[in-house]
Length: 210
Image (cartoon, rainbow, N blue to C red; front, side):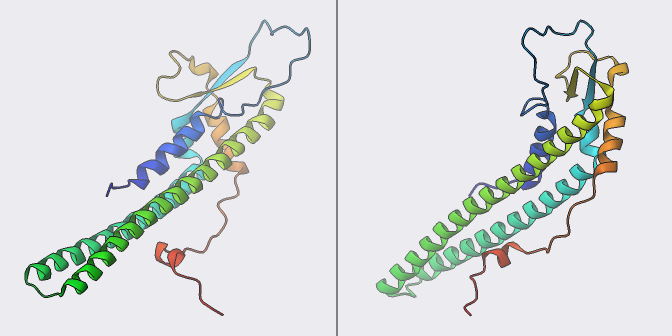
């Protein structure tokens, strides 16, 4: 079974969410008919790495996703090890003629079912993790875009770009507004809502009959 690295997924997807803020649903003022582009563009940029490491939202939710991913990975690893041990025990006893044909067929069928169930659980938990990560990414994009809309009401920038790695070949530091943006984002952020921690096992437990 392929090993899932949820920690890397969490960090990478949040980074992509920040970098795509000026690409996915950007804040664009509507242009009136016949209006020409301004001759004196006012441009600024924000460094993605700084938002990742300094914006409280990113730091908090990266930890949440990492913890959830580790919990999922540990659960799947434990179940896989249990299944492998059961299969090895079955093979050993089978070689010792410890089972009747009917017993061997029944155990083999049960092991196959456990393997299928584990694969299904793997896929379901992966999908749930990806869906939750995307939910956080959307919230991150919304928070940044909402802040920039208010921030730019006074600043009047024509363009605010995100700088990630070498996506900007050259940028004069005079146009860097990262510190202002990070400070403003943290000031507006109220923190992640308190949430009851549940293990993967609890989430997969069958509902109790009333």
